[in-house]
Every structure is written in structure tokens, then in C-alpha cells.
Length: 94
Image: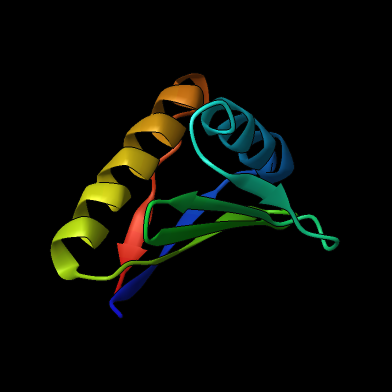
């Protein structure tokens, strides 16, 4: 299954992860793990948000490359909109 890793440099990673999870929690299954990560399930695609002190790590695993690209776009657009004031940018790597 294709996967990618995204990174957002920010000192407010836990807040953005929680905001993102809360926003999508009304539409899709979301769970908070014991270690503070957030796992979201977009049909067959899993997104895991891992907040750290100076960044937010985003792991996306999808059934195919097309869906992976679509979910990366959804994640990026929402996080960048939430953090517009702080000029958040998501950087993806395969």
C-alpha cells in the first residue's frame, strides 16, 4: 500500500492535531491513541497525526497512489488553512 510522510514545522503541533481530528471527527472515525497521536480513517486510508515539540508528523497510508494524492491534498489544505496566520506548510515525502 502506498504511503507518505508529511511534516509541518510548528511549536503548536498538539493544538493543530487536535483541531484537525476534531474537525474531521464529525465526518469520519477518529481515535486518540494513549501516546497522544490521532488516527483518522478516510474509508480505506489511514492518517496518523503525531505531534512533537517543534513539528507535526503526518503518516498517510492508502490503497492506491491516486487516493494517497487526494488525501494528501485534503490534509494539506485543511492544516494550512487552520494555520494560515502562522504560515503553516506541509512538506510531503514518499
